[in-house]
Length: 224
Length: 224
DNA sequence: GCGCGGCGTCAGGATCCCGTCAAGGGGGAA
DNA sequence: TTCCCCCTTGACGGGATCCTGACGCCGCGC
Image (cartoon, rainbow over all chains, first blue to last red; front, top):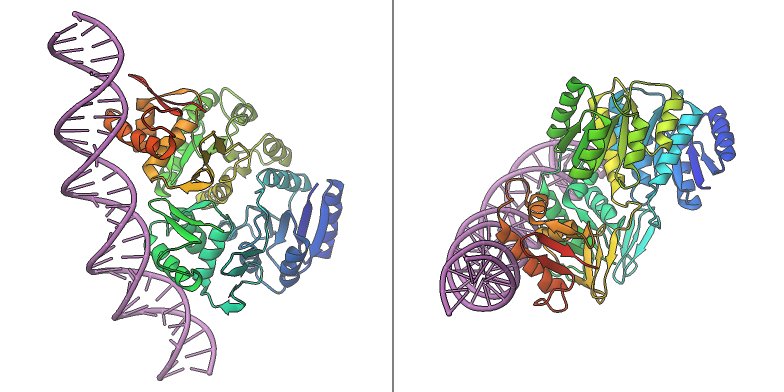
């Protein structure tokens, strides 16, 4: 049916999830910590990720942050923490659903079905190539003519959000919310400043953008 | 930001939701029972629906069933029932998320944000093709012979409203209200000006419109 | 033939939006 | 501590977009 990456450090729960998901017709890949989770995700190209927030090495939100720039599929977060601030944090960091432990297996499967229904058909190719520069979303690296280009975290977030939907127009609100978080939807200055910086670093002619184009009054668009 | 339809029979909760959602920058439409929910959904074209399962007239799943054939946006279900079989049932009936009452407002908003993030690539057909031009609603892009055509936000609003009902007549009042908002129903000048611009950009012979036709005294019609 | 309402067309000015630059502040590294 | 990088914020000029009014045309009814 689809490939699921399960990330959890509890071997017992991992085993139970593997059996249940297999029985439901999924192919299962597992990881027990954050680093191997990111590695497995890049290597196995899963359709869905089930992610436990309580990992030994990395914080769950760090894994989410490492995943989201290039992984377009749904991420379902598992956690023992029932506090709603934790939920809000994880959801805003890019999670699509949040289930508290202990949970019912049937419900988990139903939530996965609901998420898969919405699955973006876009190919989550971790590397974007143009005539002038190459962006490796998974490795967080940009190169022009083989020379690496240094981007600040904010520049990177903005670029990643634009590259996730090549050719599609991305509204300024969506960009602001994705990069700066909810509550910054009005700060369109930020977009102007950072788009300018990105264009200076990536565009062959920053005054006449070819890749990072502006649609006045609506948003921005990355055209390959 | 986006239009939310809230369906609940508890006036107090309805009021709280309305206030919270407004504060978060959403436009709010409400309904207190299943039948008016379906009517409102058809009339107001919401982006998201928040649906209480315990309604006086219809069962929540019936509302879902009535909504889903044509409504592609996210539906978040509210319910007092915590049993996981209820959750599975609702999720498999087409709900995208299931929150049990009582719930935290911040969490609800975060879940709505997560759902809206996914909303863009709908399962419906977001591309309209004619012999002379192609309109990609999701990417907000128009092309003629492969060459992109730039439209202003107002032109987009008008075109999108006309394309939502291919072949059907759209009244001027409906167009004005959809694009300029309530209170502009008399400004038929606007329609003349912007229809003119659209025709100049899209029609092969702007003087004799083939796709964006006028019905004198009634409105306009897009004929594929 | 005549008047009238609705529509298409055009152009000008006000307003909003975008690109650009530079200065200030905060946090992390040396 | 000091330094440096990055983020934020404000200001300004130029350009695009929107609104507005005017004019002429056409079809309809009288």
